[in-house]
Length: 283
Ligand SMILES: Nc1ncnc2c1ncn2[C@@H]1O[C@H](COP(=O)(O)OP(=O)(O)OP(=O)(O)O)[C@@H](O)[C@H]1O
Image (cartoon, rainbow, N blue to C red; front, side, top):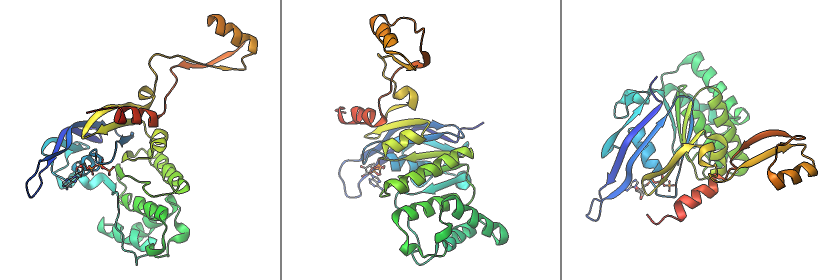
């Protein structure tokens, strides 16, 4: 099966219109995302996350390298058929209601009649905006707007959803709702490619993470592996008596009384890893 996302050696150089130095916004970035995975791209402001996503969507032409969606080159219009996109700053017609907005996008995707109406109902229910369906978007909160944006991205039942900062400007409760929606997408087998500055949320929802810094991918992997501290071992014991702990402290002896739940390396947090990789780095 083709990967959902296959970005190979992507380079994007922006050339200033009136002279000045060209900017290498993305520098030989490769990302492969398998169907059903939730992948998070993190990095400081201006590190090339949005440009990478736009190149994948065919909105920005790569200077070199290729981007493929389920095997189809991003420069071909057909590649976007299976993709839903929530941009960083989605624009909506403020005078339309939630239901009208989804109906509008549904029509653009070729839905009509009953199937359009039932899709609109289903999406409003999914993003928990059923009670606000007839209110104009001009009166929606930021969190509600992000959720209607997410519903819009799901109109044509995409197999891949690309979310550029889905929780930007959303309060913790709204962020939690969006996190739960991402879980719901994963449950349905939909591939999610997101970028976010909310590292705790990325840690919660993503299977794999890439850290991009000044256009380059500096770390990538399964969260478990990335967050493992290499030179330490952790023992988690259930019902361990003080005597047992003492024994363990003395010799790390065989347990006897307690039950070993898990042994492995303790985890750092994604936030600490991110800060270590980006702020301590000169280049
Ligand atoms: N159309 C453009 N023309 C010129 N430079 C651009 C253009 N789009 C992006 N850039 C530059 O490319 C670099 C990467 O920008 P990009 O938006 O991809 O970063 P980002 O990681 O998404 O940042 P943020 O977290 O702030 O959204 C930045 O220096 C930005 O100024």
